[in-house]
Length: 421
Ligand code: BGC
Image (tube, rainbow, N blue to C red; front, side, top):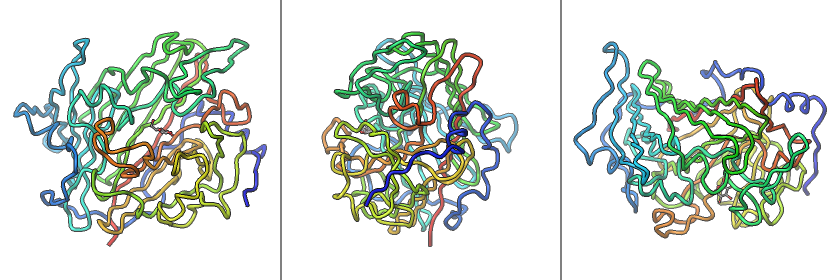
């Protein structure tokens, strides 16, 4: 039976603060439990080849012109950069490749501030790309599934594309009829971002300024997203944003993961733990009903590790699978465990920690094996999108997504990779 739970006042006070104070995100080590550590050296990839184009090799090794950014000293990691082509408007797109001491690799582009690939070893040390993507810029220009990109200004849905802020009603594109999805027709995942490689942090910082009125949102908003990869095998995404006029904001990264390797079967056998005692029921248009329901005795319960596929057919209003936002347990604003996924076959483990109040579990229900989804089949990947709750501007009881001039939005989300024996 689903029991509805309302926010208690203590939680509510925290939630109203909406990241206006700095997130307690500094300490990553020791957070969230882990699998066994990764082998220190990675052998050449022997993972099964994805059925469709592999952005790892096609994006990076097709051209001989890979030029490492000059490092200040020998110990500093190098960030390999390479042209990724030009947009139809002539903007230069660059591919950045971060590598850590254990051989993990992360690919990034300044189109959509997107992750193009994440290579991690399996329990035998064999590297494979576990992040769905496109082989070239043409794929990212279309990118119907939002592979790897930053979604905004408002990730997830806003009912009927309408909200009121400071007494004024705003109308956004109903690009996911009847609602608004992932920032509208041309969201942040389709924008050219300024990029700055930060070799001393093994990081790339992306900046985008969304003009006042873009996609119908008020206020010129500057968003900064920094991806960094450390030698504890943590891919950290730090976000910050400021505005010159009151606005609403919900940003997330939209990576699709398959721990067996992109293109290797479905994720239905992956074991998932969600550190989430409540989730947000939605109507047939995937809009929150306003309740925060307990997961107890429902197919939404992943408090203990469970295969993603076990009860996927019993989900409600998820388009044939999971497509729901969960309420992450613990204190919003603090970096805390949200999810852990284990693929027993390869041994790969991914943990997600976040400062956000929610995390959207989406099991790739709209992937359909066509060129629109780069040939990737239904449920061949899962997304864990750390974020605020969908349609928050129309739910005053949800943690606020309003940002005012003088305030700074902050989010930190960490993906930690390891292997289980
Ligand atoms: C949404 C899905 C949507 C997918 C791709 C997810 O964040 O929850 O409903 O199909 O993104 O747009």
